[in-house]
Image 1: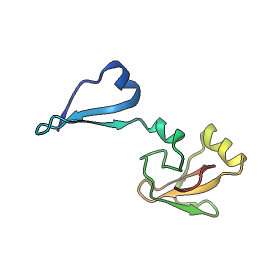
Image 2 (image 1 turned 90 degrees about the vertical axis):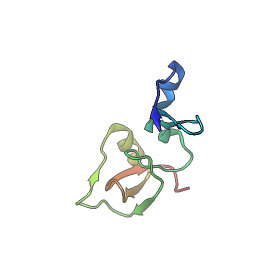
Image 3 (image 1 turned 30 degrees about the vertical axis):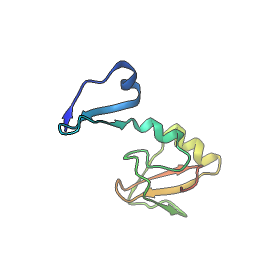
Image 4 (image 1 turned 180 degrees about the vertical axis):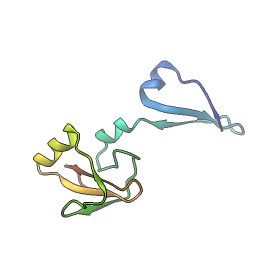
Length: 96
């Protein structure tokens, strides 16, 4: 894999774009902003879908407290925990 330059429209979608040296295929890693528009809950830090639902916050792992997550909590969103990042957050969407 070799990192390549992104075109102007690709900069809005991908953080990194690489090309395979053998098959010349272009592969990109999308921005985490797209996790906000996915139909199911994703981790806001790593984008992973391997989440655990919690009843109450754990005092050891950090809890995201940005305005978007606070609004999700006030609207009745569930508490989720990512095992990879060890982060907790509130989200209205269900697990997919």
